[in-house]
Length: 125
Image 1 (cartoon, one colour):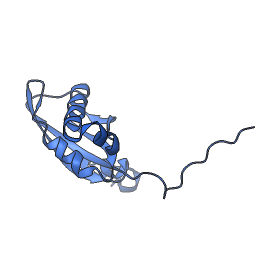
Image 2 (cartoon, rainbow, N blue to C red):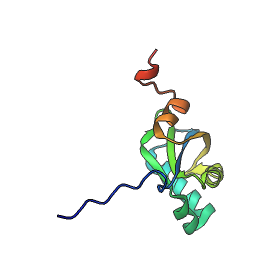
Image 3 (tube, rainbow, N blue to C red):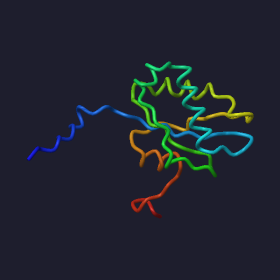
């Protein structure tokens, strides 16, 4: 029977960061339009090779359409480049927008706690 592949130890894994952002706009934005605009901005700013090295993901499950906040996952070396690409976004369709980076975290849980004010069982008070 074939052995299952082993999981990479933490020292060999690529390090990632999570950028918490808030969209300031004249109207509410849905995830699809926002994601397409972010991808186009990053592709225009970094090019295809830079975008592939940055390993970027706009996390759908963590986007709140009501609050217009969300998370973007990227490589730890590309954080400043992604922040610059987000700063270049001025319009989504005909709506003027600003994408403000609230902060950077190493885990999704810490980003939600720190920047979105989510509570868990350890700080429930």
